[in-house]
Image: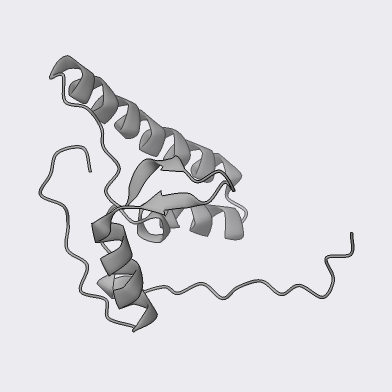
Amino acid sequence: MDLTPLSVAPKILPPAEKQLPNESLRLWSGVTDAIVSKQFSRATTLKQELEERQRDRAKAREENKTPWKPRFFTGTVTPLGKPELTEEGRQVLKALQEQRWELKESDVTGA
């Protein structure tokens, strides 16, 4: 199969200042910057710190018996492997396509 004629779909990203603190580009920006500047030890340290915080939050949810629930996806995929959006996920995707960046932080634990 020749994939050459296929083009990558452009990503729709809010400006950095409009992104929430837990969005990937912001959350991992220190790691990315360290890799780009070839500071691999620093990148490794930052990555380990991020992952440890994620493990700590998961442990706290487990101890509190608070299930983690995805905010924008149902947690299942269609038979074709496509993720299924929640209603909030559909609304956010539509807003992003219209370049409306008013995404708010979730007030639901675990989302």
